[in-house]
Amino acid sequence: MDISRAEQRILHLLAQGGRIEVIRQKKKLAELHCYSRDGWRFPGLDEHLFRKLKRKRAIASRRGEPYRITRRGLELVRSELDNR
Image 1 (cartoon, rainbow, N blue to C red):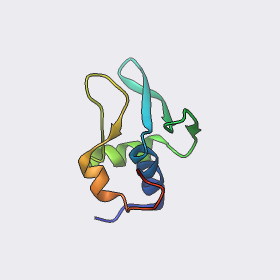
Image 2: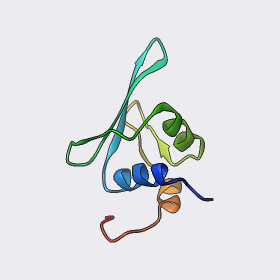
Image 3: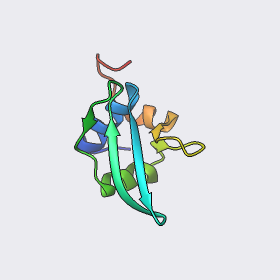
Image 4: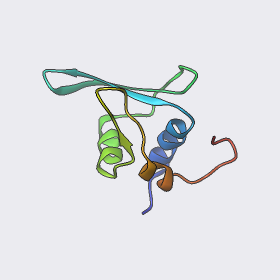
C-alpha cells in the first residue's frame, strides 16, 4: 500500500521515538500535537492526516497514552539511514 509524503514524514518521526498527543473536549478532537523524541513539535499534522493513519492502523494508543507507531506502521514506512 502506498502512503503519501505527509504520512511518510509523520511515520518517520514516530519511528524514531515520537508521539502524537490528542486533546479532546466532550469526546471530540480539540487539538493534535505531534512531538519528536527530542520534544520538538511538528506542525505538519492535521485531523485528516491523523484519521488516515488511524484507518490504515499505522498508529495506535494503548491505555490512554499518546499515539505511537504500530508494527503495521513500521512496515508502511520506507527505511532511511536516520531511522532507528
